[in-house]
Length: 420
Image 1 (cartoon, rainbow, N blue to C red):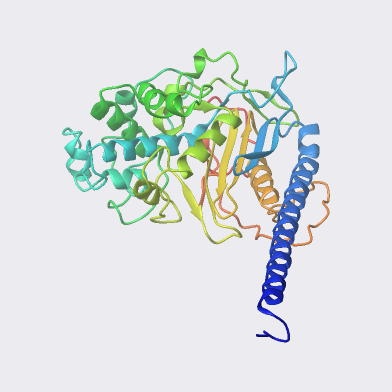
Image 2: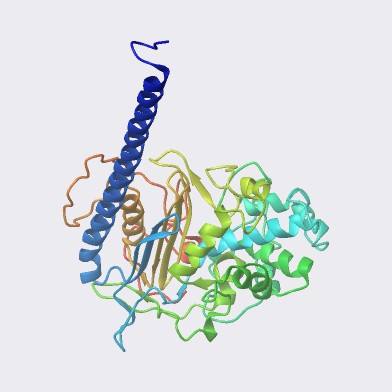
């Protein structure tokens, strides 16, 4: 019997040959795709390095940058100095204050407590703080996490102090009797007071200090050995600087307890990669909790994280600053791309610099142009609009004053010499 002019045997041989050819074609296609992806990733890293050269030379940027695709680290490098007086260089091992990047750890801790049956996100705050004012009666834990409580931001108060040790009780006392800015749940307004209260809840419900809870439930289990709350004990912590003029000068020391659960943690770029891989890999909280944490409620803000779906590739991120540090942690889920930028310089252009680093790492165009060297345009340039959200996200009218010391708002001019 013949099959298309041949025998069954010859047909089988031809079929096998076709399968081999098809298999080779698919394999070659995959290899080509991976090669192209590798070349594109390498081109992005080159552009980041080229971009940073100018700002490192002017000392507008000093810090550490890590860029990784999955577990593959593409860039892991320190720039400038952790201590200008001693000429000690920044490195991937340098510890930096995280400022408001701390908030995602606070949010994850609350979700861990919910998973253990210790609380519910829709519980009223008054369930755990019986002495709260009557006007706080409708405020829930969810409102605190999403900045929709209406509680005013304590870091914006004229009397706010950041250089002296304090306690959560003392911090809460500064705003507990203030009128609400709006009815709970009606609006979004960034307030560090929300996360001070969340830290207080973590301590009250778990029976542990905030730092101990994070250490025992997140940092140690994940192997984040260069992360913690009490940075005063860290000899490897970068000295903070700011630029009131053309050169950075030492910033007044910021007491970690002033930021508490809103902005008091320290870490390294490498530890934050561990964190991102664990968080989005399901090793910190459950998938249902992660969905809660990454579902935006108002103004793109979820639970301690910002979800940006409007500007290029979807990104899940948070930024922050204190006088002496500027930070940004970004995750692009589609490409499993992590971008960590930790700086010990607070400069009037820090936010734009860090936004551009993240955009270039993702293969996009510059989001802000202010006299930096011209870079070659990538073949597939995805030019993002220049009206990006500020360092802490989608605040429509950020206030670059003492409000931003822990909030992560955008400083549009170089800050004046102030003692925060």
